[in-house]
Image (cartoon, rainbow, N blue to C red):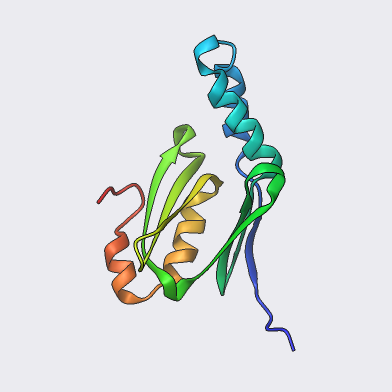
Length: 132
């Protein structure tokens, strides 16, 4: 019997990240950033549910990371693209980190994630855009 999960967000990175980096690609020095943005747009997918955060990425989307909320010690966000999207770093209790780049509606996603966290993890996370 499978446990039902309610999906809050499922999809890829914000399209603005790709557009911005393609525009930067017209300068020769920013071509690596453009290639990275194209790879993220093609292969990176997020799935955030009421039970876990799943990130599928890597070369041709072959890597998958699943985190249950009880493992999270802290979540830090950084707004990007004039606040249209943002990056998140999820720090686990064992000290490892998972980076979520160019998350669309990152403020709403951050609020949803912090609702699922323990009180200690909420306190460590602070607010949106805080750096600790």
